[in-house]
Length: 523
Image (cartoon, rainbow, N blue to C red; front, side, top):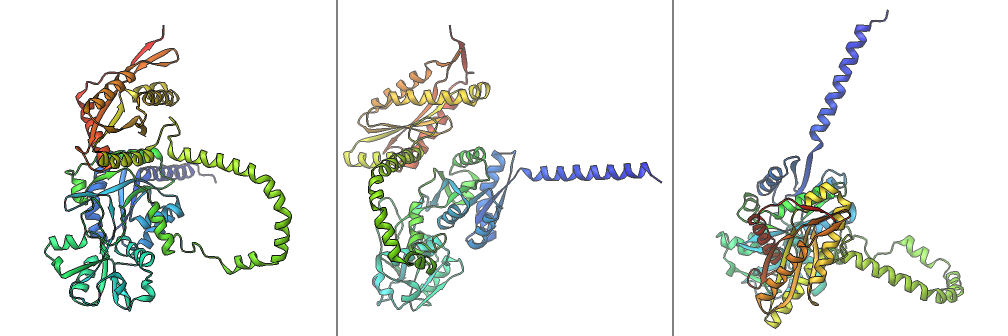
């Protein structure tokens, strides 16, 4: 007999179960995972980086940011491959592997704090005991015992490995009497060299100075091998310097969220709990990690493990019936010569287009952030030689968001294009204007001889941006908040100079009275 009450009860139960599952799924939908290379252990990794995650949770409350630490780079990369992270914070070589294999892209670079000095680069220091008389130079390491941090360690191994291989022709895996690893603890390497357990070792730059400051060692006991001098870098080092740890996103993470996260991290000040806990100064625009890629190619490690190698099958294919191949080549020679000119023209056009796209903002067609940082660095170098100054003007449009939200992003895009055109018209021949992000623009003024040149430029920009912009049947007046920094008075690095101008812009924006966007009908 059909029991309607029984079926109704079961249907109700199923419906409640489905709604519960939907509710549970929604509860976790806003969880944002941040993978972490906890190179000093899970507990210390959480202690160092949880304040930064707490900062994001406080500033972006609609999401819950969760720190997911891994001691092993291999396990971290495997988890990234399974799509378990939205963002990742790891060392440069681990990042480049994720960039190649999983499409990760850097959004910021760490501005580290070492003995109260902000640094965005680091390297390796190779050292021995000062009384080790048979080791006076790097070349003397052949046949000696050596210790590094781990096979996947970057500053504590791979950077030094590349230096040994490239500049000294030393293969550590063949030319050392022994090569051992400390299991991720760099202090253990220093103690092993000090106590005579190994002849020499390598640690990340600033490690020796840090341990000496803590009273763990006496620097006079050690001799740095192959010591380099790099302008502006205060710590002993034996290698080239490479960009600091990046904060990166994965393709599944929206650009909108990545931009929000980047902005909130860049707003961290040295006195904030996040910076204090993480022992850093702040975050800066992402540096170029090309040098890291090149190092990994030289070492032929992941993701370039097979770089430059030809497999047996490929060799067989290349040489099979070579006479036939040669005949075909000769037959096609005339056709190749005939089409070469046209192919070269097309390729040149394509290359020019790619170069332009890589160096210019797609919307406004003015230089992008990467070109901005390069030109700013060049301007500062020229200023040092010529004893002049460099000015940075950081512009943030006023009232852009309300207009963008009210009239739509297409109208907002048209406004940004017109603003960019106006800014270009303000420039001197040697100046640069770039889109920094969103409705922010940066102007770099070269060879500034008097501050009046900068104030005149700022006034000119302000007046030009206040000029009404036609929006079809209406007009809008925006204006901008402008922050100015001057090299060498406000900062000595391009990143710090940008940051100083950005801070000045925020001060200017706070002081100005907020006015709603002025929309006027066109007569």
